[in-house]
Length: 76
Image (cartoon, rainbow, N blue to C red; front, side):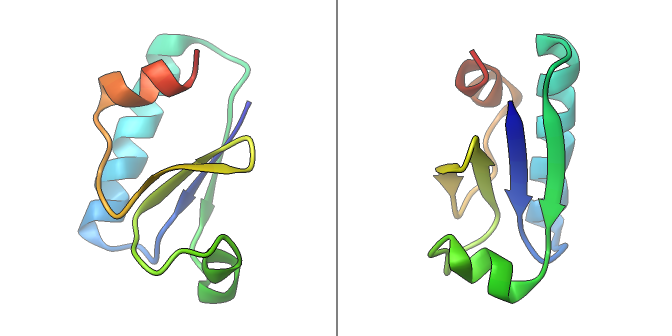
């Protein structure tokens, strides 16, 4: 499963990264995490509000920090 974290490196973006890392550690292997920080790539997803979480090419959470439990549910 491909996971992308969209954000420019703000505190909320880092919190989402931390939560994704924790969720993936609990969920097990098979997940690839990529941080996307350049504005043109973020805008290609239609995002105007970050952070955002993309799972397998689909924006699943935008404009807020998802909890570890919420992310684990998205990875099932």
